[in-house]
Image (tube, one colour):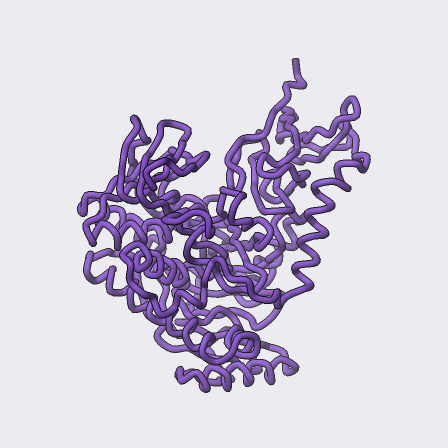
Length: 501
């Protein structure tokens, strides 16, 4: 199924790049981060060119829950303990400012995007977690931000406690993106879709050459807004992040719904918000998180969300199912700033850890200030070249082990399934003439065969039986069952085989 956001918008088409061009600033990616950068920069008079591999907001932004909040789970006690009160305060303030900035853009540009202020809650139904929530309340209060510990939040089930942030918000992300596009074009910016950046190199005159699948762009500045940075060296972002997949359902509960935004304090994660759709208020439930590329099944993803919905809304009907993935840094703080020390005037924003609505605005303001030569008080919090001690050694170890397995060990193991064992509408890796081949049989038995090796850095792919895709367990690239590239950091399709002739 498509996401609610993509289903409920009239797509606006943009041209693909048809000739070589020059520009002041080239932005790679037309999600919320890239378009927010373009909006601010065109307002300042820069000549801005945005290129996008797919359609506007079609990937991560179009598959989010679209909560606009500075409450990124139980996060501020962690930040305070790990990095001190000043950094925790500035992280919170930067994200609070982002909420105001988004509302300001909506008002200035008259964007109709269903923006509503809502209270946001991180809650628990477990008595054992109340102390953790109360610690978070104390830490946030010590940062000078108003919050509250509550034992009632309007949910259709009892809770043991929650921390509440007031005046957070939600909106329709695609309506917002198209509003940004209208303003960018009005301000003289250019947007090209179905145009993929495949390489970037420095020219002789302190400019950059961006090679695309269509033509070439020459630019003084480059902003890499491709969700996962596709340039491996320098930067080495593939060693500093992993991707996590989450699932969302939108249901018609046939009942009156609550008026807040909610997320659990710990796993299993359940996230709630409401959204307007054809005169109804639908309930969005998110969760089922796992590291992208790990084997998953319907019951552990969409199934667990539907099971949760039926507990409280037994007559509910699922109207939409979708999923998304996001980049998560090992210290849980986004990377924002210069792409690498050896790449002046190339900037990046990534690692938004599923809180991209506010993080994207924070990132855009930092990078716009850097291009304009202004000091941004929050830049140090998110510095992309930071060399802080790794705070989460377990995840670092898991990432190294997974990458090693997928790059080497799994490639040497014999396949554990043969061709005849693969059922229709399913897939697996088999061996043909001592070579691993990825096989998918569609519901009618038609065979699709691919080389199951990621075109990013060569990791062995795994079959995702929920979405019928080939996923990379190393860095989160994703390919359709027929080998077409869907998600970065890979941008090339898989090699395919014709086994039916």
